[in-house]
Image (cartoon, rainbow, N blue to C red; front, side, top):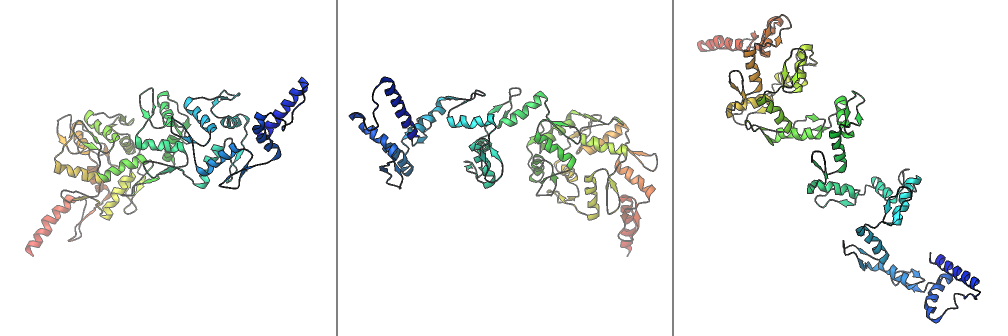
Length: 473
């Protein structure tokens, strides 16, 4: 570089003397005051490097170059920024750095007008317009227009994660990822929605959130045609079709499609209940559970059956109810052949065969096959009767008991016998009735082996026959 500049200066001097008629001077023909400078200049032509580094064998043609080089050994950084405290080895680097604070960007792209603080950044930026990708990954065939992009990419292959969180041990391969992560600890949410005021930690999440207000749905399911606001929402939705449930509870083995649902489910095991009803004081594990519970007090039933007009507080209850009309029972017990509307009903039924009762009352020790039955039982101890009949103001410990009671007022009998036209208000009554047609007698006397179709009949038999016989004997 210095050689080319010197040659250029010599040529300019030569042209000047030709025009003026003066005899040009050679590099050695100088005035006394320029003798030292010309002597250093001559080292460029002669290749002489009289200045040797005392730390290594490297040599230089000028003392200033040696001085700059020695900083590599001493680590000295004499130029310090008074704005941020950063230090530099060379004045030029320091002056360039100051543009960061001043906002000075002297280098302008002639294609798009974008400005840069550094010439090197402008040169790399130009590759975007030209399509040139000079930087090739040494591990794969991928190419990049900027060296920084290549460096970041190669960390995928090397596994290098140089950026460590100051709050935990987590590491990242990009500084931007670290900055975003640290907002989890600082709870910083710098991006605010100008429609509803909600704050977000990431700009991308804000952009996705804005689609709720605009109604924009860019992602469409190729299975059912449903449109969603984000790629992540589409991925979660696809699990409805694939049946994928990657999140497993380590307490009971139940699987879930979403991590958030698993976290809510875990509160069943921990007993944590963050949401409290302001009407009756009941605590619930999730905000959604609270919303559903409030319908008990308001009487709201937004889901209506188009077959019979019956309304429900939850969509799942309506879906389950529809099977009554279709008669579909897809789940079959491999022990007795009994069929059920839902997989959960089959799972609970199988405990009849296994005699399993995993849910125990902490107050009296009584065990139950169903968690819901345990919850209802515990209200006996607490005397909580939170469900009120709007017709007669009678109170009940569960929604199920309230619904059964309300049929007294409405005269509703939703359970119809599949063998005759008789109808019942309770499923248990229908179940007992159908044994007349099927001849099923599931209750066995352990003393004589006699069978009965009702548990009350077995109880009467044992009391009236075997208890008397045992007294006489």
